[in-house]
Amino acid sequence: MAYDGFQESLHLFDVILTSTSSGKTMITADQVKQSMKKRPAKPLFLIDASVPRNIDHMVASTDNVFLYNMDDVSAIANENLKLRMAEVDQCRATLASRALKLWAQMINQSSKQPSLINQSANPQEPGCAKDLESKEADSSN
Image (tube, rainbow, N blue to C red):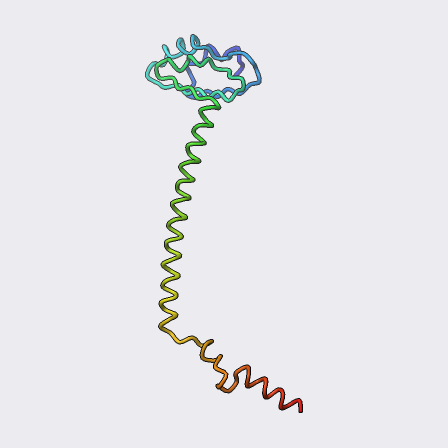
């Protein structure tokens, strides 16, 4: 929609996102108040992604009008990041606890079963490394 016709059609929109490089106000509080008279029961969400801002901050004082700017979006993103990081810390604690339990279970089970490695490492048994060394020495002579 062309900007010229926008002001007369403001009441038709539920959500408006502005993002221009203009340094002036594009949507004023008076424009929003007039448009809300035509739609009193319907909320209007305004998102000002412009820097500098293009929507008059006073529009937020109008009933049923919700204004968000980049500072608000940044604050929401930071709050969500904090919540996610808290979940990460909780997950790490849970994983550490489960890893310790699994380790204890493995140690407990290994102490109940004879280790094949320990049995075959007995130098008195045939086939042991020391026995092989002596056989190699005999065969080289």
